[in-house]
Amino acid sequence: MSEEFRPALPQAQDDHPETPLERIRGHLRSSLGLFLKGSYDFVGVSRHRIPSLPFMAKRDLYNVRDPDLIREILVKRYREFPKGALMERMMRKLSGYSIFVSNGEAWERHRRIVDQAFDNAGVRNVFTLMRGASDASIARLLAQADTGEPVAIDAEMTHFAGDVIFRTIFSEPMSSEDSKRIFAAFEEFQAIAFAQGMIGLVGVPIHWLWSNRRARKMAKEIRAVLNGPLQRRLKAVRQGREVPSDDILSVLMTAEDPVTRTKFEGDELLDQIAMLFLAGHETSAAGIAWALYCLANRPDVQADMRAEARAVLGERVPEFSDMKRLEKTRDVFREVLRLYPPIAYLSRDTMTKETLGDQEVPCGSPVVVPIWLMHRHTKYWQNPNDFQPERFTLPETKEAQRCAYMPFSMGARVCVGASFALQEATLVLAEIMRRFELRPVPGHEPQPVSRLTVRSENGVRVYVNSAA
Ligand code: HEM
Image (cartoon, rainbow, N blue to C red; front, side, top):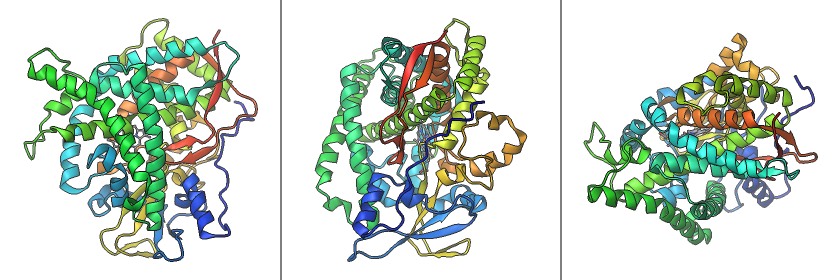
């Protein structure tokens, strides 16, 4: 095992900047400072003042680092800790009141319908479509390999994950023109949504912000790209033409909620598709890019994965049944999701006055589950900042996995696409490893920042060469 590689840590954020404005500016750069405050060995609930301008009301957020309380919030009493209104306001322009942000009966209905598209059979059905996106990504990498130039692997993985979700929803690849349009618009939308979220937390009503016009324009652009194939499909159905029957769109259009006997229709269908597109590509892209950064720095782990991919797949096309045999590959991805959880924290609001641990929490307060901190908690993990994929095979890590590992959250609102994400990551990582060898770019250390997802502020670049 290589001893020299230390996975990049976020730059320390100054806890005592001169002015409230400076503190706010720091949080606009990355929320890792605000939401992940506190030591990595504390078990309990800590209270933190939300930075605010002098004339704004003072509010606190509550950071929960106790596995039993986390379970209570996410699993046992999830209805009493709904998602906050701020997130919903940020996302409304792009995806209406859809599954990621909704609460109560509306969410229960959304989830019952969306679950039908993502059950196990659904994930198997879309495997061929995923493989199409993986083949396209390998072809793009082949064109960039052995050139002596670093490859922007984070941008490539964003393209890959966007293509996967587009193909698995619509049964068609994303055209290169659409992919350029949608990624540019998404990048801008996310930057605005994150900044608005941070500003909104401080207490500024976000509907006052000038950036709303720009966010609306970007959301319109994204929806237009997704609406094209949706309208084509609806027209084909109206005309009685044959349409794909096993992609995500076909299930979303036909699945009926068993309780209310309703379906997704009209704008609501486009809202849910836009949400799935966002939730389904940004997180996976972030995770896979971090995995490739870690692998570039660990040739020994690459060699193990290459041997596994070649033993399981040989020279042939991967099949759905191969995925569960790529165990090392899957453990590498699980370890990367521990070190760089794409969603660094979960945020909920209290609906009444609550007592959490030794804290009295007023009604309407933000309660944060800091996934990042739990994944590096020294009470549960040995050498928490090291990249050690083999830890997932050790019996002594079982307890940590049970109480301090939650990259996909837990409980009723657990990620709907968890199996889907593990499958696409396993597939593309095995495909990359069986063909290529990655090397780090000297002097380039990615800088983790958490905006909507945990990304590198300065990109992720690696050398890609053909493997022997
Ligand atoms: C490595 C990749 C992924 C990670 C780490 C991840 C993580 C998460 C987390 C932590 C949540 C809970 C958020 C919260 O409660 O505030 C979540 C929810 C969700 N995820 Fe994922 N996700 C990933 C990939 C995907 C994919 C591929 C899809 C769809 C294709 C997806 C769709 C969703 C949806 C719809 C929700 C909302 C579920 C609900 O509220 O009922 N995710 N994800």
